[in-house]
Image (cartoon, rainbow, N blue to C red; front, side):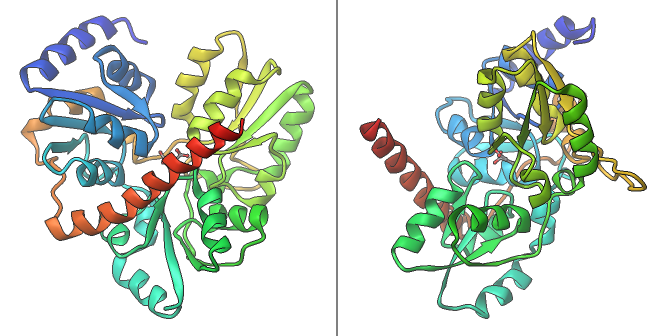
Length: 329
Ligand code: CIZ
């Protein structure tokens, strides 16, 4: 953290208090913003936990350090609150790849299928879907639908879709979207790094290509990867997901060595280099200036109501799933 961190913290604390606001950050924003969220009584989490945390706060204003779909999810679950994002340009390649009109047309080609979409989608796409899922619950949810004889459309991440198919054997109609960060991890370089480190574990987010997932010791959501980095017996951890996550991992295991999974193979070009350009738009200066620009997330009531139904179905399923899992163990 830079030497002015304490000054910034005091400034942000005053600012949030004066404006009846709470700062909620995603694991993928930079370390300073994550620490500011933690030190001001906010939270750092995945997109769903961010929105759930927002519901439990008494402040009228929630400031989201993350990308647009995270602000929208917070608004959908907290329509009575004012939700602000640090930069309205901060979007997501998955969200951008799946525009509602094209997606509606895709779904109309398979009218007998349930529509399951990943959290990384717009509020409009969520509003025309049957289910919203996060990567942490996608496999059990898809398995549950298949057990009931349902056929499935999956969008927008083709790699996560392929991973679910590989794990479950369930055939889905998959939208052709991808995350520009995870798509760039390269197997040849990753194999070299594994060999070089010898004692290491490879943690991979399932938005990555199948060939990279095949080299993983653990595959999972941001939260699962953070937990795995802590419980790993290896001293060296290679991580294939957005770099912002290293802040949480290093905090939990200061004695371990963390390595970014390589993104540049031989002769390859690197567009994102493991850093999401949109997450990178989030800065602490934009937090202080937030009310000077038009950064509020506004959604129509009908979109909120329809999208909320598909998010709440996931939350209900998730609660039941973990309750039953607890009973069994
Ligand atoms: O839902 C999220 O926060 C994202 C983008 C990924 C994950 O695995 O948690």
